[in-house]
Image 1 (tube, rainbow, N blue to C red):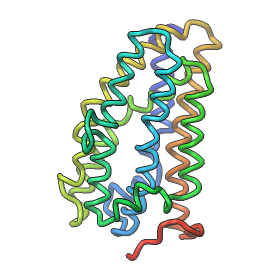
Image 2: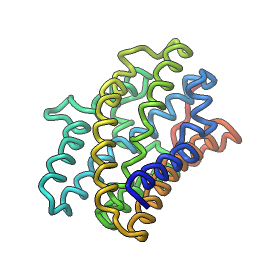
Image 3: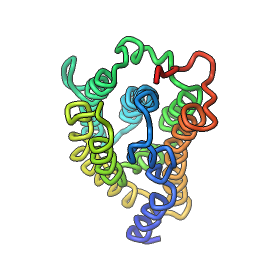
Image 4: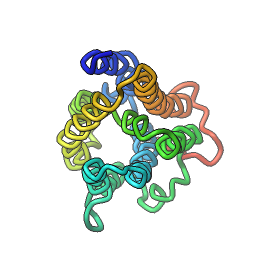
Length: 239
């Protein structure tokens, strides 16, 4: 494929498989969940957020290109911050604080679903073990994140009286960071995926990442919506 055709194929995967299409997200953004269900979403999503720097650091550790390392270091700073209390993870904890969850409990990850842990750990392992090209390509779900962020923020502010702009501050920065990051990653894979085999690896990596995000919502829906089977040890909402 030409680089342009590869990009089109990547965007088609997002149109068909990105988790904005999942029923749980439609409930979340449409104001159809109760406070406890929103808490469960934020609690489980924290495990994904706090694992992102782990996968990014492993990618940097394998990159021989200093330009790639410099670009990817910004992702660590975005999530970890340059000082305590800064960065995306801190802003996500502000969200869970605002929802009334105990911060120590959130950070412990003791209450997350097994499905969440398995899916996120599989993503971290994928980035550590697969080729650098596949690792970069797996980040390309960020191509589609501005749409879901815009829908999420507007829908949740409109629908939930326990949500405010401060609670959702995490997403303000991501509206700028995600397009910047995805532009770099897209240019990288279009340049580096030169053979049919490499291009198929890129497409498969994006499908895998979409599956990781989808699986997390499957677990949430099964436990907290229908049929409502919460696994032993997982978070049990009060409402």
